[in-house]
Image 1 (cartoon, rainbow, N blue to C red):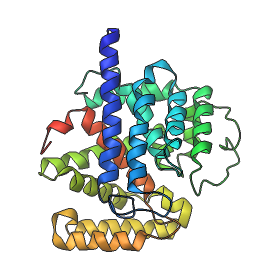
Image 2: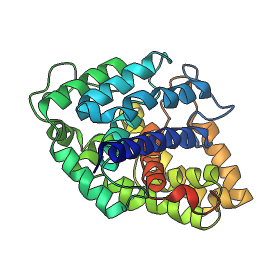
Image 3: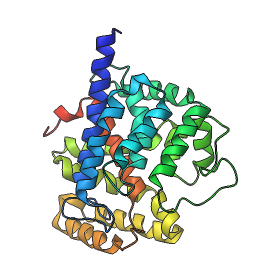
Length: 296
């Protein structure tokens, strides 16, 4: 591939990553920030600024290793926001951008996932070190401590191996280990179905979010509030879908009730990991031509 061709692909992938962040933040997902629905420490506008901040690091991703780009993306975000608005998004989108940069748009998804696995397998201890620095900079709540490879120290293993250690307790880490299984096998197909049925982007994103949340407990809620609370949140999502979700009046009422129930001053009921997985699914759909399908 020529230099100009690769540059164009990187630019396309960076734009898709920013758009994925904007579409995810703009959809009224229960328990999350969206237009007119803010947290005490983060407003919707903070998420818009965070999406804009990712443009530079992602558009220049070919100039540096993966971990360094993730660290720069978090640092760029911190220049605009005072709270952790996008750490999970950065960790998911960075390897996806690297994988997409070598594929001509619209990207074949099977090829994208194959390239992605290669990107993940090639990560190094230096990548892990930069990601650790990014995590410490973002300071996510409920992180806790572990006996081996804790982020408070310095890693001794490549990034994908560090993620393997955390895979049982963190949805983002699990994606690194499984070749983004949830993103490709659950999230993107759910979004495809919703868009194929004629749902606008905001409704399609909410439906995808509820589908993922109903299928598995959110690990952010699990860390902050425990397994019982995480299970209750997933049951609420399943109930909303059973009542029609965004497609019926009863479903929308259930979603609104769910949103009110999940909001608290500490954001302990926020299904943030599922929101991050939803954004990753949006990215995959976008780079594979999804913007021009459905309502567009």
